[in-house]
Image (cartoon, rainbow over all chains, first blue to last red; front, side, top):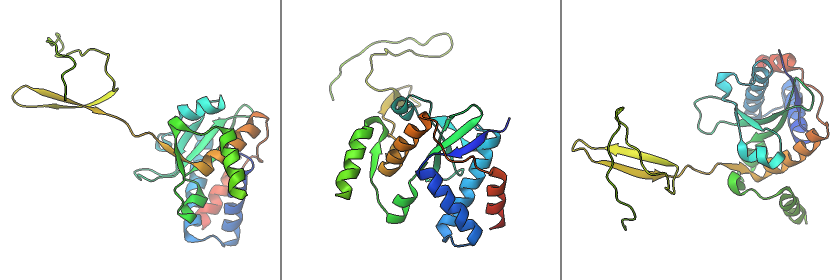
Length: 137
Length: 86
């Protein structure tokens, strides 16, 4: 059985659209091209076998508790301590996987930002939204 | 350091020793020395972190998933081919 892979909205869809368009037009910089390749390969592996060994897919319990649905992450590459991770869930329909996040966040990497929270003491969605609102003024 | 517990332990028939479970740590690093003594050091695993932006994006994406709203299904083969062509 092959799974259908859908991007979560709005951010994962925007990211994948941007990378796909960039690949088509050859306008991606070196880092984005590398990310697009790794992401494409990981998505293909996920569609075939979500728990394919090299993906090292595993549940992230703290996020499962946060969202009330099992949340998994898979690695974009092997034997790399700082490897990117793709966060996904099953659904919303049977036979589907939705990509909900990419870690580290591509914008954090570009801006050199180090704005991280520990999983055991995550702010609530409301607190995060309030922070975002105060940042934008 | 203050001694808070002291006890004699006998190994079992499978060469294992059992320690009381009322310990504050879950993981330990063990060292066994050639004179027979053993040291156990508590190990605290690093609490994994996540980007604040990723978390914010995921909060929104998960709210949408739970209401059945996701992007169009990806053409995985085309995406893979495109990445290979680069």
